[in-house]
Image (cartoon, rainbow, N blue to C red; front, top):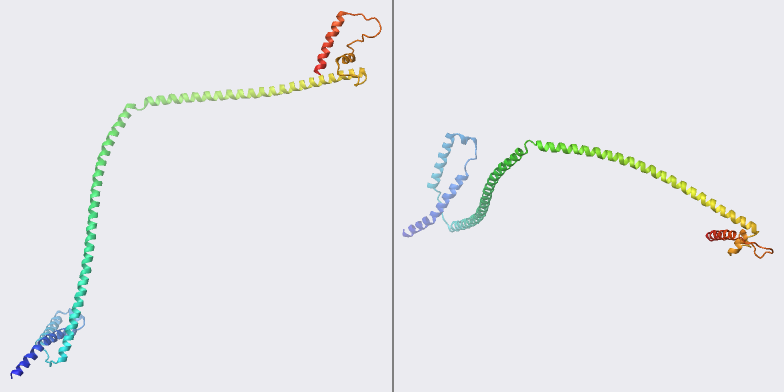
Length: 291
């Protein structure tokens, strides 16, 4: 009897965890055996009946588990299942820790990014505040300067006295300009008349020069013709050009200015005539030298 009680206790000890797992399996199977979704679930009476029936089935399955014989194979099978469950739980915990680590890292990154952005926002807000203060100062300064400028301009305008003196001076300047323009026009007309007169005088001078040149050319040609005629007459009297030499005595003899003193007969000497002949000889010498 003691041995039987020990075996029963042993079997009951082995059977308790099996009973517990069997209860969990039955619960899971009961959960999986739920009906699919339908529109009957919206009926409150139907839902209450289903819930009560399902709850009663779960309670009965937990309180009255099916009795099985526990063997070594079932124990090994349960151990393998427990090991698989532990591995599954460890992998799940590792994945959960890894996900938690990545999540915390992302949260840290986002936190630091938010802190950086907050710092930037604070800096921008501070810069905007400085800009606002600067704008306030500039507006105040502009207002004061504009008021002073308006006062200065109004004072200058009042000092001008409606620009009456300036208008008078401008009118006088305009009159002077008109007078100067009229004087310039008269001077231009005078210059034009003087230019025309000068052109006429230039034309007259050119015509006069042409006439003088013509007269001088005629005079020179006539003089050259006269000289040539005289030479031709002299040469004709002598008979030929071979008898004329470069000596002045021969020229005088050819012209009949020098008489032959060696001719036979008595020669009477007249001093006046000799003087005249000497003067004429000198003139002819000069003329011949020029020629």
